[in-house]
Amino acid sequence: MRIVAELPHPDCKISIFSMNQKFIIKFEQGSLEQSYKISEADIIGGVNGVFELLDQQFIQEVVQQFSTMRNSFKEAYSRYE
Image (cartoon, rainbow, N blue to C red):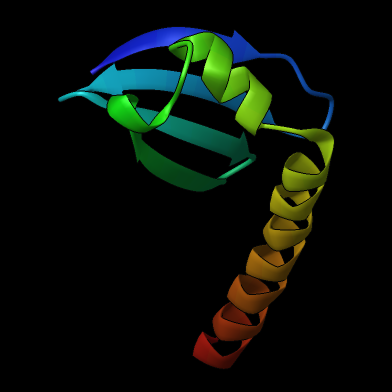
């Protein structure tokens, strides 16, 4: 797996990897991460096509999902204690 690009964003780290003819788009926020895989054949324009896919609405939804993930983990951890 090799990193092919990073997209700056104030709310999360966005990295794009290439592995086995797939792009892996990884979002990180603290200890949480979300990954999305898409075939390179399904993206026109290579990594530039991935940048087009990652529009502001999608990134906003990813950031909202981080909030849901964090709350779910906190609730699970409080039941664990």
